[in-house]
Every structure is written in C-alpha cells, then in structure tokens.
Image (cartoon, rainbow, N blue to C red):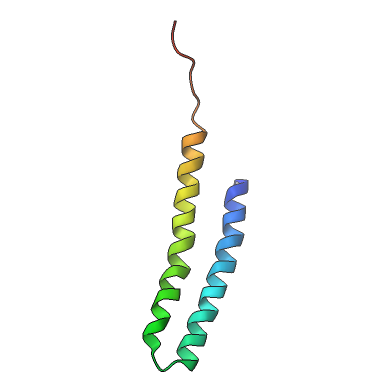
Length: 70
C-alpha cells in the first residue's frame, strides 16, 4: 500500500465517522429526517472523490517521460 493510500484511509475513516455521527444526531433530534441526506452523501462522496483525484494525480505524475528522439 502506498503512502498516499494510507493517508487517504486515515482521512476517509475519520470523515465517515464524523459524517455518521452527524446523520445519527440529525435523525435523533430533528423533526425533519430529510436533513440527514446531505451529510450521508458527503460522507461517502468526498472520500471517493478524493481517492479518484489522488489516484489520477499519481498516475499522471508517475509516467516515465522519455527524452525526445534525435
């Protein structure tokens, strides 16, 4: 596992736990349970988008560039 994947995993775990706490709190205290949808979607979407972005960045920057042919 690469270093950026380890950092992403730590970030994603913290992000998901905080989002889950927000969803549970909204469902437990709010009269409008529809408000829990946004933290739920962000709790899943942000780590997934960040992983895709970091994966693409590593993929683009790690390509071996060949010198131009003479």
